[in-house]
Image (cartoon, rainbow, N blue to C red):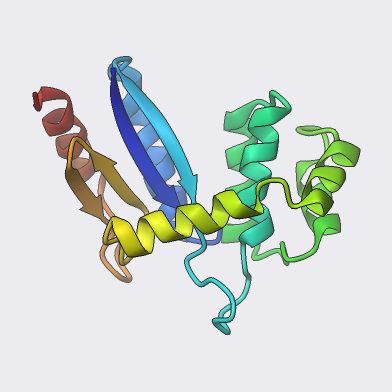
Length: 169
């Protein structure tokens, strides 16, 4: 089994598009396990809202609660990247995820900061250890594919990256 690390931020429209491409491409690669790594494109104290520290934690809460992850990702990208909802407030995240997650459990998990360190660790792994400059960013078998600023990635780049990663020994 090959592991594909995916660094992304729900506030990034390029990440939304990269997610859509990946979901199409991964269908023909059951030998790949995706390791989702939500990060903040603009972590605090950077003055570039919306800050997605809580939104990233929601990913881990959704996994823990056994949510439909496709519905989860779709709702998060739509609300944050497209509608530009203010996800720095737990109440807004509960509104976005109503019907996908138990919102009382979501609210409690966010208040506990159970996954806060995971987001810090993801940010560190991406920006300090893996050389990520722009998201979405992909890592597999020591190879990397990063978005280009203001451009993102295209379907062909991702397909070739995955194909080459699978072929690598």
